[in-house]
Length: 283
Image (cartoon, rainbow, N blue to C red; front, side, top):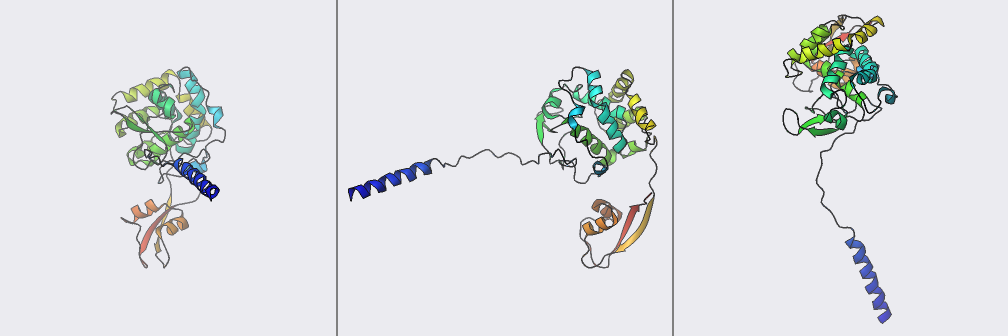
């Protein structure tokens, strides 16, 4: 009997000691963010952005673009000139402008923010950003900036940032090798608050002959002037089971474009409703 009581007591102590190790420790909650996927160029980027990245996927070997530490501006240019030209072919932004902005905003890749976040263009988080981020003192203390796991994604995000915001739309009507108009246009659109921002970009471009990289891309076959797109316009009568998403897939048009064309404030549509469709003509 005594032996049995001893066994029970020992078993109880073991259970108590095991339970004591499973204490619940309250941890400070952190913002839930989506880590950028190196194999998905659209990961962490605005969901309503264009899909040029599907036509121009980012290179599979990003290492060839970067060598650290970057010692000076000339080495920065040698490091990123190829990817700036790559982005020019994909989006039409002059490589000279991309490089000059990168030099200016990142301190030639040596600025504190750039070293912490691989953010070469000082792009802040803004609404809709679901990638990684970090905080840095800029116009105000502790502002939220986008963070990338490789500089290459910063260059792609810069292209998407300019090409998806309406205030920069007019820039894409300029010649793709007219860096002066682009420099003044960026200031006009509000990219930077510095009044001398255009002059600074132009000075960098002319000092380091960055416009030569624009010339290489144009000579390689990119039209210097954007060719106007031709569209066919028709209508679609909503049938049972139709959704805006299904219709957008059917006609290769975005849901947002459908809503804009038809002055829709929501995704709700009704049977028999006639929708305007505008589709780019295939060449």
